[in-house]
Image 1: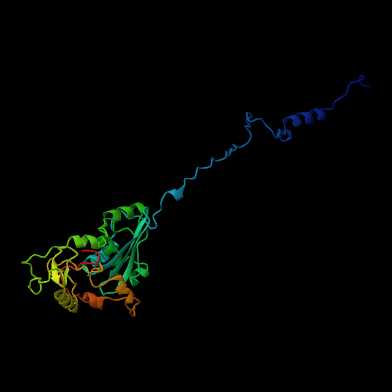
Image 2 (image 1 turned 90 degrees about the vertical axis):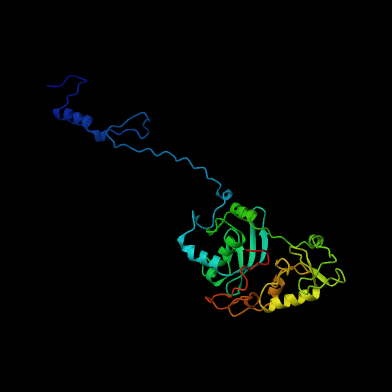
Length: 305
């Protein structure tokens, strides 16, 4: 018997396939462009990566960097060097200020304990050309300069900021050049009863044939007498001083003492590669040998230290 027109007979298998098709999730293909408000409960949570805001770079070039690690206090490692710097006889032969107003520096000539002359530079990274420092060690000459000459309180730093250098040099003893005109004004007049401190004779010719102390007291001395006095001091390796006040003698050309930079330039280099002034200072060239104490204190060319 034929079925009615326009009507299709569906078999039971056909209806079963339709039900499976509707229940099978694999056949459900969600759109790739789902709304952000749509939540898919069947999938794992997806971490949404948001672009990280770029950090604003600070201008590190404007902030000065210390060239060595900062030290809060003096480390135990420099204790022995510090003691040698303060106990051994060393002499400051010259000080020269350099650098700029913002970052000042100083270059010093230091006669070490054996008479070798070393160059110490105090700047952002203090240095010395002695053998010990050249091997990368901290040396007594740098500490001697910082403590004795410059009177620095933070002497244990291996590197300084420009602000620290400005503070050190502002508080250091000044480098005072000899002012010949001022010294002439400080010269004492000769009175009738005045006598030479060496020969105890009167100054019969007034100021003629005399010299005077430019460093401090301004007293007059027979030139011939003073020349003999200076020669005797040199023979005993002692500094030439004023017979009156014992200040270091300043010559007519403004130089002070027996060791000048011009004199150092004329000296020959020893086997160690340095100029040596041990004979001038009356000290031994042998390391570790007790130094002969000619005077309780020894003034440098730039003043007492």
